[in-house]
Image (tube, rainbow, N blue to C red; front, side):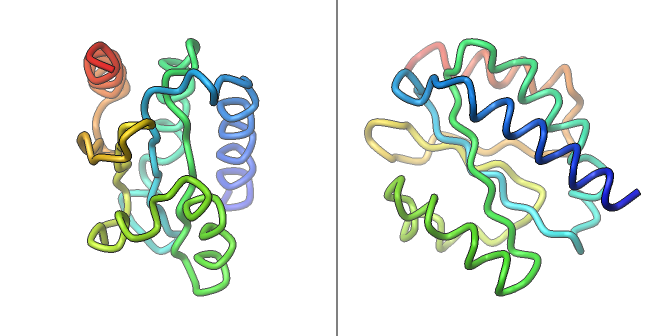
Length: 132
């Protein structure tokens, strides 16, 4: 089951990231997760499906920050660094949270909890991208 969830999450994120919409992305969404996080275990697959469903226009660029171990954190670091978010992410310690940044200014916008209902995730995503 664990392998299925990881595979499912990877497929979902690949789909989200392969839209080729990064140039028009308005918001960078850093998904902070870990295999030992109970919120992530319970909600990750459903939340990622909701993120994909509500990002058909490519307004969000999703990046995984997997802090399960020092090895996974090291693998996550280059993409976060490439986006200029390394220092900005330092104070954000909680897992099971998606940290949102303006794609142009890199200023923090808000946070979404993976534990939100799929409907609430969709409403929040639509609301937050309106002003960008």
